[in-house]
Length: 195
Length: 369
Image (cartoon, rainbow over all chains, first blue to last red; front, side, top):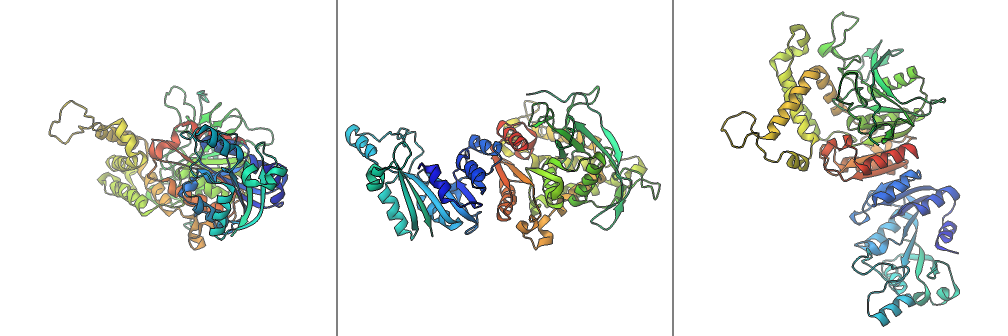
């Protein structure tokens, strides 16, 4: 399965879903169409917001770094934060907020411990530029990259409960290697978490 | 993109039935002047109602025969524009209490045979929306595709979605607020005092004397106008530029901003009615949909079924983005379908009148999705 298929599986039908950093609304469109979910996105990029509005999605222009107090406790069945936490100023605070707002949350991270990332740094001596981290260090929005190990330590320290996790290779699919040794062979990790 | 709807003409009709006002009085035989642009489709499903703001009127787009100045929202309404008249049938009425042809303080009161003047009842946003609903009945429009407005117009769009959930599919609430702040009311009060204290106001019966409180209206408009512009906009447009090259040590208008404000005030005082201005500022002050719900805005929004778009502008300090976010957050809490855009624009509160690309794209995407 790829990431979207797992999300579709994890989100029950007719759920209320909030996607923080929803981009052009790809995930929300699928969830609203196929799972009949009531969806809302939060995004900061104007073009992405326009795409969402064009698709009939509800989207709020808001900077996640400036807080999410306007969303009530457990006001959504599922809060999704996909490939977003690494660009935020305060990932820990964001994680606490995500689990406060959602009864359950789905968080996806790029794994900095991925073998090709490690090799890239080891052999080139430069910040890794890979499929899931495509930009140079001075151009990337990613300011808080972490490994799968780091992320799980943070969840543990923050008393966040990991309900389920899935690991994906660089082509975005689940694989046996990524399952056996995720921190080395998974390019992306997806967690279902709650408070 | 910059096509115009061309030459337009105002239309007039008399609303059927009686309108019971919030103040306890009622109005009958209400004449409404309005304009339409574009064509109504067969099942009447493409109609958009435009609500005007404080000093606005029904002339939202196009030009009158022999005139050059286009309607106040011509930048957004027209073929291929944000509110696309190739797709939509756009209706813009002059609200009751106005001074451009609809029933208002300068109209004749049939009961007395005299004009209403200061005796015209105080109207509220709810009354306006109810009168617009009567207008939709007269026009044969059962459900508006959208109701859209900026500033006080946005408040009407919001009220529409609350009061007539079955008659509105979408609402565009632009540069609005859920209610006025103390500062907003304070500015309105200065404007009212300027009019009320003009000797030519004659307790509101100036039509009898043949005089008009132009000086008061001018001052009212000048103070209002300051709140429509951002400091940035004023700085880049006027700065401290002088009309002449040197200071003359007199009290005439020496700085460009002074002569600009005086000019704006003069033009306005020639074309607007003082009683209408008093009425409309009061109507703004009274607006507060949460007041019947112990101040809980989310509860006030419970009846809403429409899809909503709320838009604010970064340099607007009259109704700043925080005020729009109050509306948005209450809608989120009430689990309503809402989108929110915060547009980076330098024009202050007046930004809603300018065809900024992000703004017009967002609005057209919303209306056409």
